[in-house]
Length: 282
Image (tube, rainbow, N blue to C red; front, side):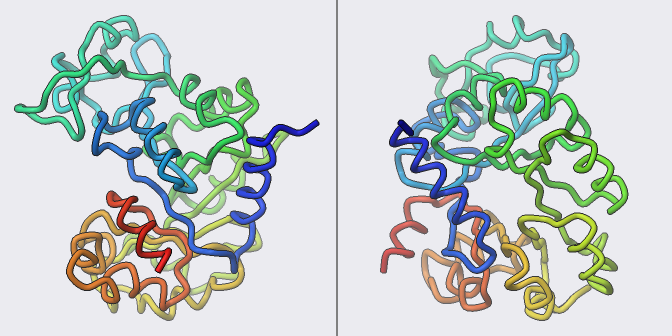
């Protein structure tokens, strides 16, 4: 008999695979209002809110452990010092993690720096994770997903050359979930979007744009992929979405999240999961 959680994830996975499906909410670094970002508690908080996906940042320690932290160094988020690549996992475990988004004055907590394996076991049959900052260690990440039986729970992403992406995706016994990033540096991909779709077969395209018209016309770019895969926009800060951000949404929802939704965006990564979920219910 299939568990309730398994049925829930099967439904979520089906919706994710529908290019024309409902708008899905992605919690950036988890829900860190009441917990440190990129920790088990922030991920649990996001799941409890009802988000569809949780973004996590992955780093590799000196002794080869994959752990969660956005920065390459530990100063912002812990009471320790140094680069993660120079530290062992045991050294990281001895550090106290700072509340919320950290910083010099942030309170220390009892949370620990989690491994990717811990995270994948936490989210298994419950939600997706957006695997950020890990393209260079993608083979290691894939191995953890395979070990935990969560290959279809993790969304790889990059702005790498098409051939590099194809080699990775096609070399695996179970094909990873994948999203391609289009931003000013690789806007030439928009000259032949069908080539990108046929070769990579991405589940989504993540658009990053500081301006709506340069170096590519954003609305036209959205239309190139609408109905073929999901359209993803980040609203955490203005430079990612030409000002149609979380902050804008607090005062003008139609020009914030609503701007993208009106243009067929159906995946929104946000630092304001609660507010966006409430907005979508209206």
